[in-house]
Amino acid sequence: MTDPHRQLAVFHAMLNRLQVEIGKREQAHRASLEAVDPSLRGSARNFLAFLALRDNSTPALRESFEALGMQFPAAQPAHINTGMQRARWLLEAYAGVARTRPLLHGAQDLGLERRSDDLLGRKRKGFSSHILVTLPDSAVTDRKVVKDLIDAGMTVARINCAQKERRQWKEMIRNVRHASREAGVPCRILMDLSGPKLRTGQMVPGPRVAHLRPRRDLLGRSAAPAVVWLGPPSSCPQESCRTIIPVPRRWLAGIRRGDRIAFVDARGKKRTMIAGRGQSGGRPAEIHETAYVQTGMRLDHVDRNGRHRFARIGTLPRVEMKITLRPGDILVVHNAPRRGEPARRSSSGKVLRPAHISCTLPEVFGCVKSGDPVMFDNGIIQGVVRKKSTKEFQVRIVRTAGEERTLRADKGINLPHTIVRAPALTAKDRRDLGFAAAHADLVSLSFVRTARDVEELQDSVERVRGKKPGIVIKIETSEAVRQLPAIVLATMRQPRSGIMMARGDLAVEYGWERLADLEATLLAMCRAAQLPFFVATEILETMTRRGVPSRAEIIDAATASRAQGVLLNKGPHLVAATRMLGRILRTTPGHPRDYFFFS
Image (tube, rainbow, N blue to C red; front, top):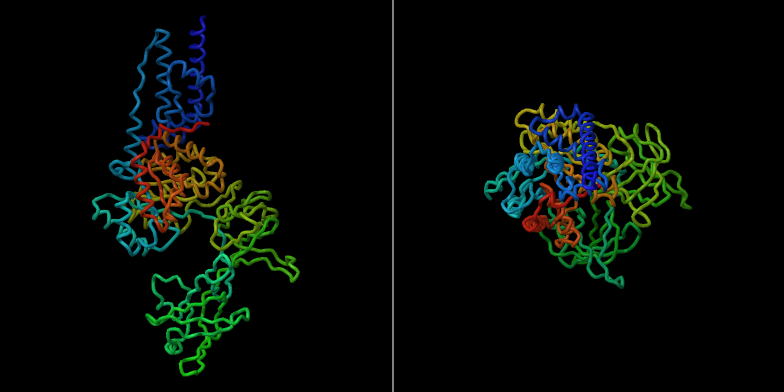
């Protein structure tokens, strides 16, 4: 046998072995394949072929495809089976026994476009992807900001069910629908169910004190005074961010612009405020020195006639308590709903009782094990479980961003190596799902971990009355990454579905350094399954918050534009960021097959 014929025979044997592996993969997922919606079965088989090719790819197999002048099938994830058939047809043609005709590319691409249109609506003309935007708080009352977002390119408005209440959600939805009709541009509503989010519990209330801090220059001199508002909270101008100090109205009425108000602060320091011009039943005051004022503190005012007039500061809001943590510290996380406290120390600094805090997901205490890593507040505080019981576990802090960091209430907790068994839908999620079915077009579920979580959401959607919203499954836990094939197949049970990569918690749980590879792999997997894919978290984050993008996030946004949708988070410059993302989407080809990561 000549070398070319030997090479063809070897390639043919490799293709046969690969076909056997694909068959084994289909047999192993037979039940999942049967549960897939009939319109997606071909795509599901292509997805399993993609997984088999990924797991059995070798340099020799790649070289054999290249020797025939063919592109390796993994480079076009939507056409794995087509690529295999073309290779087999060429081999048969070289051998003079061609019996089949190769399939043409394109059919599945059109299927993905149709599924994306069915889920999200038609893309804006000239855009390669949809722009999803988390609605800002102002969207409750400001219809103009919603219209500006639609004009800038938004085609899907996201409402976070973890924030606000139904009354505010209704106003947001009403404003989106009205602005959409006014602009003549369709815009769908996505309601994001919270899921079983693991967070720190409440802290003990702090003292009723306010810290007044003037701005200082490089030499420590006062460059700008601290400004406070004297009067009831209702009198403070809307645009003001000043500290509000409640004082009696009758006492305040006797103060004029330029009057001095003296007091002794909580540290025993003598301080003076200068009153400003009165307005709306109150008046501002300036102070050029640092001061701590607290509820019940006495204020002394000398009027123009030399008379001393005294008043007591009314009830100030309590300061939010926080726990300061350093490497080596111990933090107790407990099941009991008691409020968290900082460590209690002796006068010499010895820890008498370690800091403690509760968490919002009781199921975690039956799942966590000694030695498991624990991360708080997006990974800025990292620790390891030292001791555990059914009621609490101790965490030894091993790393902080800087010499020390503070931990507050309602901050995220991540357990990347712990398999947490908790219901996919909380009681709140089920109530919110009923609202979403009546008012929204799409629902997404946060913190999905297994295929069973996906099925639970799908079954719940089927049971709600009225229209059935489309479903978006969010991948943001390390367990979900481990269960990706099963999750994708479960998602395909419902034809109007998609996958979202939420990179925030996922970076903490899966690893920052592995995130780019995972994004490209998820993109390819969804391409193989012909499922709409969305990228979320920190897209144009600097632009959204500060008004000017970084170079890196422009490239990140251009890469993300190869997905069917890109999600922007809210921030002060959200409209400008949406407009910039629109420009990126109009100048980027946006074809997923142009970019593929294969490992």
